[in-house]
Length: 441
Image (cartoon, rainbow, N blue to C red; front, side, top):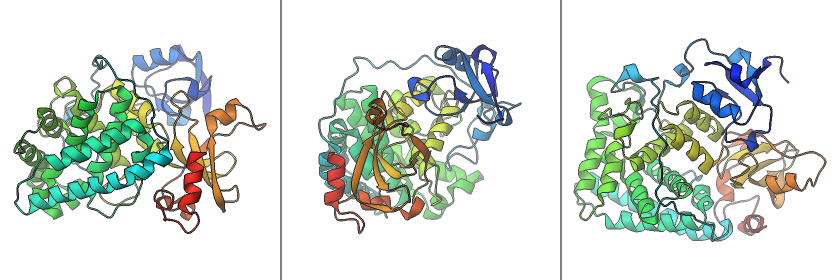
């Protein structure tokens, strides 16, 4: 145990303290990551239901409100906000209740669904590309193509939510707006499935997120590329992409009103710091809240400026600190439940020094996912695939020491190109036959 860590009774915790460890395994609690700041009394109450004491890192303790380092929002929002005085204001609303939530079971293996979803994934990009091109050329845009791909995405995610997430790890060469909208829509569907939303709502959600950025086709390219540094009139011009998007979606025949609502409110934030209206959480429709959350998460892990972005672990940590500030608390917590601390496709190093890629999750053991090992303990590529379910492996105690994820690795660590493991015929180290065999094991 680090000398910086001090054991503290839960009831003695104060705002600003950093909880670095618990008196019980993390995976036996609902807390989504290893380490978080105490913000309000509710955090202490939540901890008291699981722990008698915790370990606080005294070097990370904050004497000021712990939200300051999280004042930054994604590049679209970082320059100015509608109500800047509310940046750190905590707004507490009752948890969202899903009426008659659906229960979805995995119907296909990831191997089978990845094979089926590959064509769908390309079709989605082609559809969005066609929409952006039509808008740029001043032509009419039909909702039919977006509706078709959204329906396909819904069916795929319902069969196996990990498949499209796996494919979304590709390094696409398309415009950032295409990538961002498609990948955010995948997170939205995975989240909506976890919440138990009905298929009709999932379809509306997918369409809304896919179309939420189409107004950028009417914004000058230089403004889009420099959106993180804009101010004044230029920032106002950039933020008008939301109104452009709403107008374009509203012009589409037979468009579901829910889709327009998502597009209109996806940049609003829980405490009123979003744009263009600056409304608070009780005024933001539920599906738009989901859209805003996944939009922000995708921007964290894959920013427009082509920087490396955050690891998934750091991104969910950021979200966790922004609960009831930028995003509603229960939605943040349930989103982290849905995607996991280590989403499918995340590159990780195990306690055995082996390196692998997360291929699936165990909802009751979020820190013990399924891993496809790709490098041995010497960081040499394996000749054939090896998939390990950390939950089963540790429960059966197949070895004397438990196996766990040591750390989340940045994209491209050890010169691993994750793309080579995602699509058929894509690897000099492994063939798709090896990969498929590993996924099926």
